[in-house]
Length: 120
Picture 1 (spheres, rainbow, N blue to C red):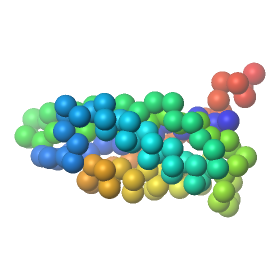
Picture 2: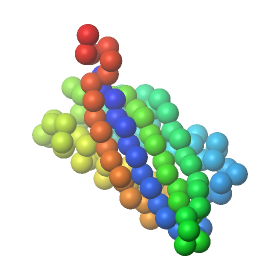
Picture 3: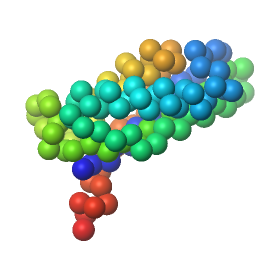
């Protein structure tokens, strides 16, 4: 298994999700991310979704999203099966998904690393 850490951010005056609906939004994102990762890897575990809203000095709000998921490196369904290509494909897929849910969204980073169990 490998761990994916995905960070995204959006700036705007309004979002489809209100700050007081964060828990429901996290559950919705968790389910949707699970489906996307299943399509790419055949199996997936979404460990964590954290959504935070804050204000900036120019009257806009900032929405940050952190996602952590586990997938099997060997079951990646696209070619080439490289870390860089996985990060690229997962980043594009998450960008499209999050844009549907939150509006314009920037994927700040996608990091793939071996799970702790594989490092021993």
